[in-house]
Length: 182
Image 1: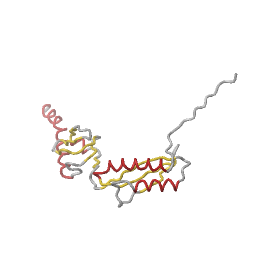
Image 2: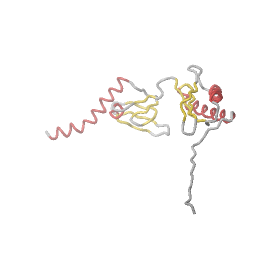
Image 3: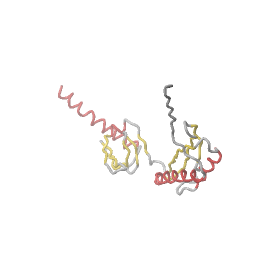
Image 4: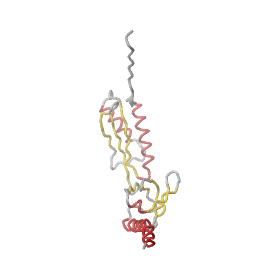
């Protein structure tokens, strides 16, 4: 009886990975070639087997994850949709004119190569920060071009703000020292 219990406990993890593998193959939350974030790991799916899933990371590492771990956690399929939105957050000086800032950011994003016209890019005022007026520039791109479009949008935003003489503040701290009266 004790030997049967020991064997059963030893197979518990294996059976869990096997049943999770079956579920992954049936429900197909991702396929070979998709870029996913699963079980805390991000990479391109190289292989889906009954017990494990193999990912290749952006820095060319191979990660083998038990299917039970994947199926029991959140699965983010990064490349599932053909289009993806690139958000570029930027803070500008409080002294900057709101309308001029909006127009500058809109012109910057419209000139970026790879930004899709539909859905149209958007410039959104998101808040008043501790040292800046906060904006987000939203540009849609084909998923395969997403990283390049995000970088080009970031460069275009910085260059447009510089050309319009709109400052990008950085956090500062005033330190006041007091000396005892002599």
